[in-house]
Length: 232
Image 1 (cartoon, rainbow, N blue to C red):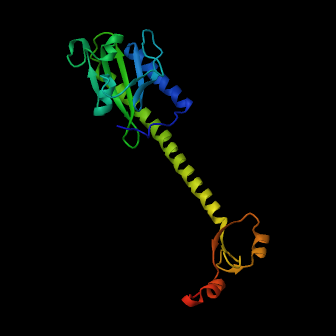
Image 2 (cartoon, rainbow, N blue to C red; image 1 turned 60 degrees about the vertical axis):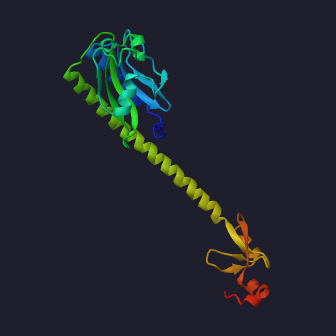
Image 3 (cartoon, rainbow, N blue to C red; image 1 turned 135 degrees about the horizontal axis):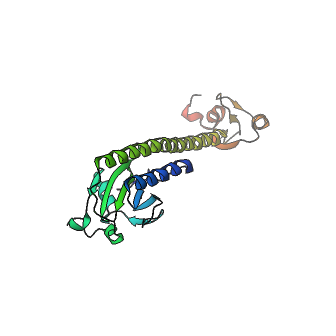
């Protein structure tokens, strides 16, 4: 699952907002870790981590995403909510990597880019069993939606920037090509933009920056290849 669309920078002011989201979640729900995770193939990294006591996760930490056994891997794959109230009593989750950090309960939601590819997850973790309330889920969804609205703006600016860069490169190429004009291989006359041939001296006096490509003018065609009866 390559995700080349998830390689753009998040502005500092938005990062500050996301940090506040993580801190508010951890404070209101009273859990040690609230995270915003980001997919950076082939890894998933801790992008934002709540500034809370007992939080074992730090921004910039990363793990291989696929077959990692992480809670967030399942959220990314299914693009659905994942709730694990107590991993220690759950055969599927009792050996997952987060249990080694004493994070035994988990609630996470996917964060998607406007093209519906995964950006990452927003999740909370606790070092004790926790079923999490419906109000907690509603709050996380509100924050998830806010993050996705931020991403829509950032992502579209990124896409437009890339398109503008390609357009600029194309225009520059045209400008270079426009400076390469046909010059007759025989008499050295030059064809201008109006398809008129003129002496090289006259053309150079008006366009000193021009580069040339070889061609052949109609008069020289008649002289050199008269047997082919080539028309102008």
